[in-house]
Image (cartoon, rainbow, N blue to C red; front, side, top):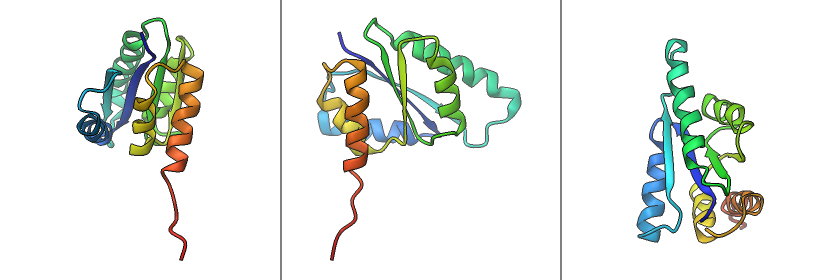
Length: 132
């Protein structure tokens, strides 16, 4: 068993990242669940997406915990993930990018806390400025 992975982003950002990662890895060792939240989310449907995120965190936890990757710190997907992660063995890392996701997929057997550090390192090291 491995840590569950849940990607929560605005629109189809997460789906696109997972699609590219799946092409690179062909058969990722970790199953990834996705929740896409509309960018123009109306307050009247917030509860629907809150339920989707809650259920996704609950469903991904197979006893090893859940790593939740969100797109923007402090935005609705991130805030809902952080709110519900308190009830489970789940950690939220915001600022997902492709290097972060690829790094996580390279280490499917890591425990949750170590996988969080792997995600952070992958995200940070994937951002570089070319020096002249």
